[in-house]
Image (tube, rainbow, N blue to C red; front, side):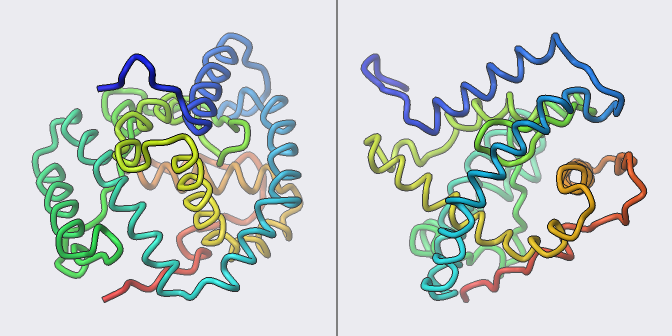
Length: 256
């Protein structure tokens, strides 16, 4: 329960701002690609996000990858994945999926107790797979199958559905109970986002080689998200070669 004197962190404010922006844009869709009706806005926001990434985020991620030993990076990733397993558990309960619910419950229990608070992914070695379902998945499960591509400010590519789900997922994250002050919450968010960006550095050559970086990112993201949801991959609007993100991103070795 949130107390009356709770002050939303910068992460929450960003999530709520993105949600509000997504709702506002819902009434002013324009564009030719049915998957990307907000393309005019999205391209401008993508250019802004890309400029920030090139100036700040990418250099920090490269430095982080260079100076942080692989086992430490893997431990950080496992820790935040363990927190997100709680979000996945909540959403699988909402979707009335008993088998994934038990899987997520076992993952959180095993990794928290035997994995040093989630730093070691013991559960995966036991055959308990990651589900990583958010509220966007729950909305898709209950009928919101196709959602327009959307680029939130200072955030990864998304859809209108998943951006709206972002705010709901925030309140499901147990990190709010672990990092109880604005300062610690902000720092945990920065570490998580830098680690996420470092894992995507292997995508840079393919993205930079694309004739249209925006279209490349959009098409790759929509295909990746469709596979996550078990949907048919949406057709790209260009003739560029199909890109498989799963093959491009280097897998992180697990701590045993």
